[in-house]
Amino acid sequence: MIRVNDNFLKLPASYLFSEIARKVEEFKKANPEAPVIRMGIGDVTRPICQAAIAGLRRGVDDEAKEQTFHGYGPEQGYQFLREKIAEIDYRNRGIEMDIDEIFISDGAKSDTGNIGDIFSRDCKVAVTDPVYPVYVDTNVMAGRAGDALPGGGWSNIEYLPCTAENRFVPSLPQGNPDLIYLCYPNNPTGTTLNRQQLGEWVKYAREHGALILFDSAYEAYISEEDVPHSIYEIEGAKECAIEFRSFSKTAGFTGLRLGYTVVPKTLKGFDENGKEVSLNSLWLRRQTTKFNGASYVVQRGAEALYTDEGRRQIDKTVAYYMRNAALLREGLQEAGLEVFGGVNAPYIWIKTPEGVTSWEFFDKLLNECNIVGTPGVGFGPSGEGYFRLTAFGRFEDTLEAVSRLKSLATRTTKKTN
Image (cartoon, rainbow, N blue to C red; front, side):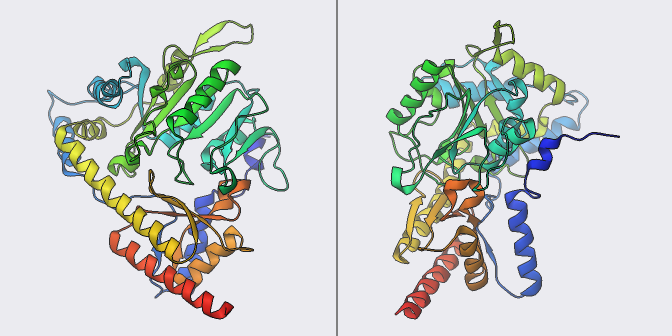
């Protein structure tokens, strides 16, 4: 008899976005002519910029020549890309970073899920709520989450509510967790922590011996000066934080798959005998065992993003999506909805009308506006009563979506009166 990992059986039958896709496909079959606008999954729509395309072509050409052919690469990434990351993403912001603290991967989703491999099953976990589902689900799979609770959430995970009532600024944990997941700019709420607020988290982690797992996949969208692009801008963070980044939403690499994780050499954990252990060394060991490295061709494409022209082109793409975000934010406010986010991130977090659940709002938008979004409750218990739209669509579709939403609001008001 082959035993399975029972923790997988504790999870819902389908991943949040798979469930959304199923419901949309059912709707499309019943309404094949419906002009559906998808604003649920945060996938990009703009083409990869020309600088990156040139870098990818260079990589392909290299693979076609014996003199420049690359087979298996270094699991932690090629030096040419890690040097650019260390210089431009960190040293240019006054953060000293060695290249052997940078690990190139196939995306932040993989790394935020896989990082748990190097930690004890007994580690206590805290997450902001609502939260990116991968953080929670992978801890369920690892056996850290405990049991599912009737009202949502898990018995061994500490949830830190982020709602309109606390302006989406989570309170510091009460349960003395070992691992704390923070994502800023936040997915799904689109909100941020300023420098002082993030500094409080670093102070807490250092005082309590906790480790912050900091997802900054959306840092390129930050527009306000007091919002840190990296947790390492906060003094002492290299002693208590691992940072995850992605080229997916910054450069449109969702289909190419590339990201990186920073594990400072100053980070330490402890074995069962209380002996100090380097987390950097453990992550290197994990990656060299379970990961063969990201594609050479794709890493050449990413390298080109760090040229002056590459940076200009990325800025143009980011501006395109943030114009969508501003349009959505303003249009939804005009429609009478309470809206958050959309300033430092390409996500719009909507308060659903009084008495309307997240999934009811999903069904209403799909059936009456042919718009697909994401129910807030899918991100955690505190997401109930909220709804997420993304700004990654085409500008023309965003205009149309706003028009439909305003029309729905007008019809609803007339019915009420």
